[in-house]
Image (cartoon, rainbow, N blue to C red):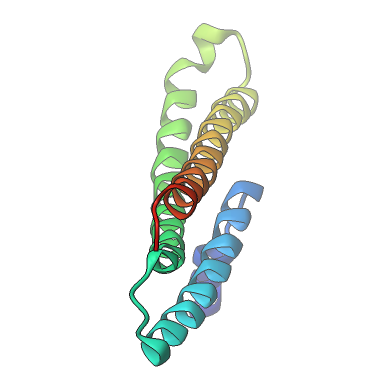
Length: 129
């Protein structure tokens, strides 16, 4: 039972869940490495934004992973409520709503990546040491 819970939480059922879980794990490792390096050097400069950037990416990716779990249940409820109105079978309607949810989550994740990268670049380039 513990193996099934760990498999469902850390790996996920859909491709977007697996991608977000893997990204959150990678960002966690980078956060630990960057935080450890910062603790050893204790340099307060504009490159500290790297630590903050990875922290934001980890928290944002983990938040999107939780949002994926919640919206997956909502997509299934929407499919159950409207599959007859749409003229589709329950499986087709569920597939439709899940794909819309996955596209929305992927768009938000890409916006998170691009936004944090652009903000970090602007801080590094435009602000002096």
